[in-house]
Length: 427
Image: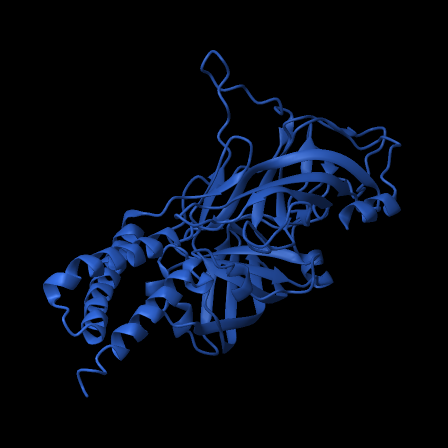
């Protein structure tokens, strides 16, 4: 009786292995990390990046703990600089809450299966920004905590083997930090408070947000702008034609005069995308920005493409010369873990098939069933490796990006996009 029931366990194991190999939940290596991040409603608030003074384990913080750091970039409102880079920032933990952990597609599902799904997350409600002797209080909400890295489009070389020189020598834009921070960066959204704006240092630029006869009205081709993504985009979930929104983080200067103020809205679309596929083939994503909306409501057609992006260091993403984002190939550790899983599956299936055959056929022996068992185990393990998907390309909401205008943009032109046509194009 016991011998006759020995086949039940191997058959159950075989069915379980087959389900795991074909399951899209375990097969997909690139979950959308934007699902784990909070989604603040305001798109026009201040955007603060705070580089911590020393490493801090966020899950170990307690209510009332003080977190200190400094701004890693300037903070603007229209054409006014509210806070300069390097200003000291103090945050107090209000309370802790449990949030979904951001998935890490660096590891196969077998590692993620044993990783806690949720973690303690600190909630900040107030921050103090100090410039010299002036302190300003802001109401803030935490977006993400991570170590950031930058990816950039590599300029194509001409026929002589040299990279073409830039054409925007008169355009002043901030350059990304070349040094990778060793401590985490807090990304915060701050509510607009008039007291903060009045006490912060503002630039001497004119308050006008529209170009006039005394100021330049054309952006030359090759102009770079730093923008903030307002929509989550991914190669696995987005579709070609989907609308992408962003806003300008810093004013763009031409000949030391503001031509585009911070807060200018931009709109683009997903031009092309390739989702992560089986055989560990990574996904790709290509975005293009097609129009901008000035603060007065005027809509201007543009042609701009990605030139760089600041991503989580765990995001294995690279950018080609055209600004298309690609997921990187699986690393050696990823392959080693999956090969170990394949060997384990092959061994279990081999033994299970032999037990099943011997339970059904009374004359079967280990020697006679070994060949069949090896063939079946080889097919199952091969199916497991073939169904492993490559890395996804994910741009969460509030991703900081750098775009480059592909052709000159005239801001004084009378060819304004009609609201009806623009809204129809975005649907």
